[in-house]
Image (tube, rainbow, N blue to C red; front, side, top):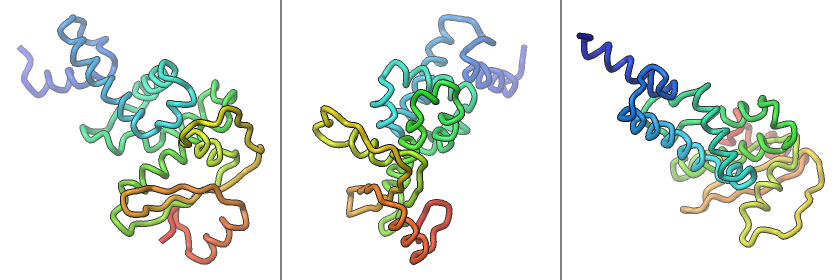
Amino acid sequence: MPDLAAFQRDFAAALMDDGRRMMSSAFDVYRNTVARGAVEALRAAYPTVDMLVGDEMFTDVALDYRRQRPPPGPVLSDYGTDFPDWLARQPWSSELPYLADVARVDRMWLETFFAPEGGDVRLGWFDTPGPTIWLAHRAVPLPKHFEPEWRAEGAISWRDGANVLVRAIDSDTYRQLVKSKGADHGHIR
């Protein structure tokens, strides 16, 4: 009879490899709960990406990501910090070249939301009009026809009380902010 620690290690490993190590219908409940938790954590962190690719594709993409990068622990609020970079490396993402940048803006929004009151302002520069696409898809109602000018642009995010605000910015504004405030890894202090 295996010891408890070995069983727990095997059980945890089986959860992350979609149950191939333990095949039983009872185990499916655990495997599905863990997989759904990771997918829903990514969906909550990247709602604009979800909106752009649709529910079914987002679920498939999130499951692929989870297989390659399982959650490091039980706290899922920080899960997926490298999801935008992972998206950019996927062969299919060449059809949506702005998607990784939209994910980066989603992440900026989330980091700003969780920042302490008066915390850092987030600042980013993107090779695509990702911030403009992000803003258009967060607008209510969604624009019926939307075709952004294809150019690099920046974004800035900050908190105003309980609200997170995001604005697209041009290269001159971005450079001025970096120069005047001092940016460190996408954050302005």
